[in-house]
Every structure is written in structure tokens, then in C-alpha cells.
Amino acid sequence: MLNGLTAVYLREMLILKRRINRQILSMSVSPLLYLIAFGYAMGDGARFDGHTYIEFLIPGLVAMSSMTQAFAISTDINVARFYWHIFEEFQAAPISNAAYVAGEVLAGMTRAFIAVVVILSIGLFFKVILDYCNPLFWLAIGLNSFLFASLAVGLAMLVKSHADQSLLTNFVITPMAFLGGTFFPVDRLPVWAAKIIFLLPLTHASKAIRQTAFGSLPGCFPYLLLAAIGLIFFVIALKCVNQARD
Image (cartoon, rainbow, N blue to C red; front, side):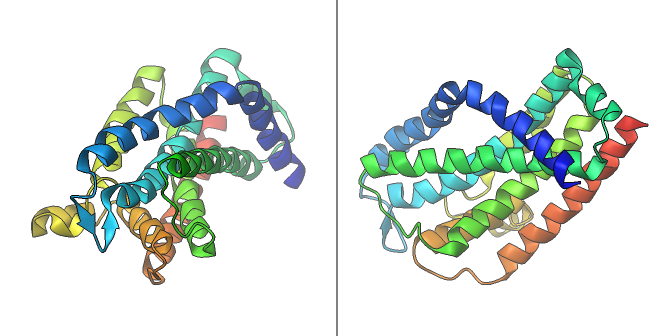
């Protein structure tokens, strides 16, 4: 399994290496616009738990970008399936389904961590320095990216076209990006709205990432929840790959 996982992962990394400059530029644009538009616009007038809004915003952008970039591996999988027929090559190769899923998930997680480093680097230009050395900060990012990369692999096996892929992004990822506690404190919403948003995994990822960045301990619940949902999505992705190969 290890050889198969390495082969799948290295293929994705070779593709990423060829377009790394464009990828980094793409990863930089949205966070930079959010920081300029919201961070400077809000200024020091809005404070949350003693932190400025721009300090509040950067951990949220970290959570959102780790989600979107991890999920973006589904687009690469679909391009490989529909145009390059790479998935058919994997079917013929002595690579187990578990190795294929693990390799693609690991590739999605790698993209997510690159995006996080890009955001934190941009934050330095805005003179925002938080507690990025906390291992729990990176653990939350890892679990969040694992969850959404696993979801991406499973859904990539179900879609039949790029139009279907766009629908999934529009109806699953985009709403979660704006409602998962990225740009605003969830506890300031009406109770009924807060209960709905509490069901989104990104809400818990944002909370854990933000609290650890602020030097607090978020508790075990967000980590256990993200790990459990991530494992469920990984198993579902494996079943979807099994069905796609049949």
C-alpha cells in the first residue's frame, strides 16, 4: 500500500510543482482582498476578546483556505478522470483503492498547508503575529484539511461532469466558507441560526484554530469531532472509489 500511496502522492506533487507559482498567486489573492477590504475597513473599531478584527479574521481565513484548497483536489481528480483518463491507469495498476484515496487525500492536505503558510506570510505584512507555534493550531488545520480532502475524493467519484463539480462547490463549500465562523463570531447570531451553523464542521475548525492562535485551549471536542467526521468521509471516499472501479 505504501508504494501505491507514494506513487499517487508524488504524481500530484509533480503536477503542483509545475504550476506552483500560479497556485501561490491564486492562494494569495482572496485572503489579501479580504484583509484589505475587511481588515482595514473595520480597523480597530471592532474588537473581539481583546483582539482587533484583522487578528480575528486571519485564523478564520486559515480555516477557510485550508478547507477550500483541500477540497480543490477534487477538481484535479476530475480533470484526470475526464480528460487524461488517469483513473483508468490507476485501475490497471497494482495500486489498492485505499492507497489511491490516501494519496489523493494527502495531496489535498499538502495544498491546504501551503495555502495556510501563504496566509500567515501575508499576515506578517499586516503586522499580525499570533501564536502559530502551538501544535494544536497545526493539528486543527491538519484535521480540517483531512476532512475536506476526504470529502473531495468521495464526491469526485460521484460527479459526471465539471458542471456537477461546480454545483457541489457552490452548494457545499461556498456557503460553509461564509457561515462557518470565518468572518464573524457565531455567538452573535440569533440562537436558531447559531444552532444550524454549529452543525458545520468548519465552525468547529475555525473555533479551534482561532482559540489556539490566540493562546487559548479549545478543549478536545472540536478535534475529536473533526477526526470522527474525517474518518467517516475517508471510508465513504473509499467506498465511492470501489464503486467507480467496478
